[in-house]
Length: 313
Picture 1: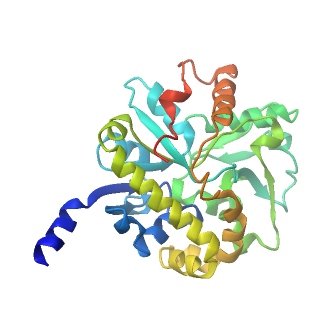
Picture 2 (picture 1 turned 60 degrees about the horizontal axis):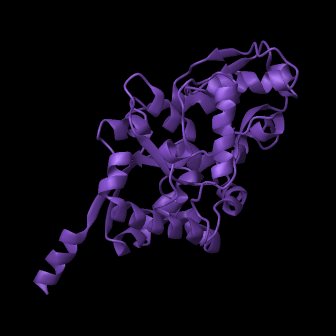
Picture 3 (picture 1 turned 120 degrees about the horizontal axis):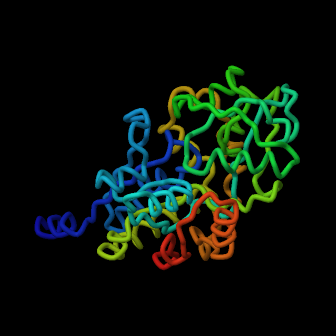
């Protein structure tokens, strides 16, 4: 009996996932898979860390580059950024959380900003992602504006609160998380989705890792993704239990103000199903790559094969 237990321990493969934000609905599948033993069933010992632990001093993607994490949750733009920087790093996307974009540029409804072009002269609280500010400016131009929005860079984890306190006019949010904040329930939000203003925005967030790990630990990564998929699909079929599992991970503020039932309701249809969870459509990614190049935001030549793979799903 003792020998069997030792053998099981030796077969466990350790992985460290760095989340892109404090725990929220986008992460629900990871926490479910960990709680329900789905990772253990796949012989994966998963450690999960969040930016709240170091106040976002190091981004998730950077943690992978530094060897501090094996996997990162990040927007697809991070893959492009890391592969095209002066000292390139072979970050690669291996799955998407959502089948469609659930993010948007938003302002509170009580403002005079009713369309993207009204953002000219307004203040935008940016996360300082590599292409973020340009994307917002292009949205404004596509709506007939000049793109003269005033960009500011608050502390990342406090950006949402700058909108709530009317410190700044607009920011980028997930409609299924900040959009489910009860503090804006009465006033509501005006939001602008990328696809409605001719911006073929791709996937966010994606699960990313290094090309080296894909080469050396493909079996472990496939097992990790299988368990993760089961976690997200469990959230769809067991919503009440899923919400309670997530609730335990929330910050005090999110625990107080986020309507979790609404949040999951806004998310679940975009998780996909048993056959297509995590799959990134090549056409969607290519359109975004072409747009980035067309707008002169990047001179580096990207190919689908170098920035993403569905092979581990």
